[in-house]
Length: 299
Image (cartoon, rainbow, N blue to C red; front, side, top):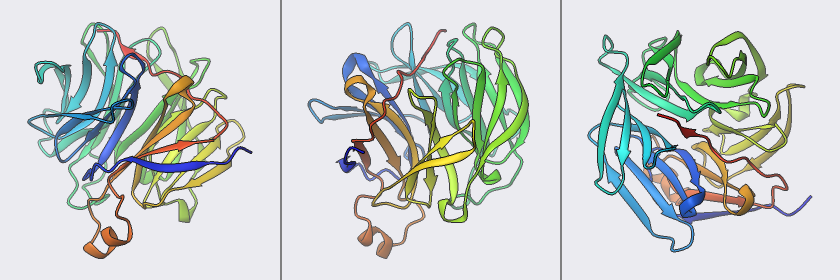
């Protein structure tokens, strides 16, 4: 086992950092701070951060094949023009649910932007239940709704052979799998592949590695865990010096580094003194496994 190193590379003080995405072209990490309504881009070479503030909570960001980015802002799928710091609405969901917002999102291997919704929280993980749904924005900008009755739509990714879609609804304390049709974007046959243990707390963001294993950030658990979705076994636990770990992605040279976002909303002053790096961006090296490049939205 190579020795694992964990460092806070950016003391950003995110209220709720989320949706880390590596942009190879600029050697940068994209991420959002949901309640601060910000999309951020951290240059791993210069260590500089650019931040763009939107007019509603920004819950996820993704690369776009034609340039720029896409993001979920409030209940809207949007295209981001980074230079002009502007957003154009591509589609809106949950029009009948004024208290809803998008949460985590990610682009599938065919270039569709999957993202789910939830009710706005009154406190971290405290909210009206069963208000959310899972959607995808197709390249032609039409929206497909997959299912509703979701509590907190969260981590998502696809198997390396593109035949399985992995998904987390946080308050189910489960990582679920669906059969997935790459051609049509259809999903079916939902089942649980891993149930979280008590000390692992709440499953949040997720990514897949180059060996087809899943990495799940555990909110309030202060860790990322590596799972084998075939056997349902946990293979590894990596603990961080902050409790509210929210999401993870691979990046850096050959996707050999892991980046982890976290939150500080819901922490009291004493907790922030104990965990001064809460809300920062962490880099984990020495995991001995690589990730894969993120997909880009094709619309």
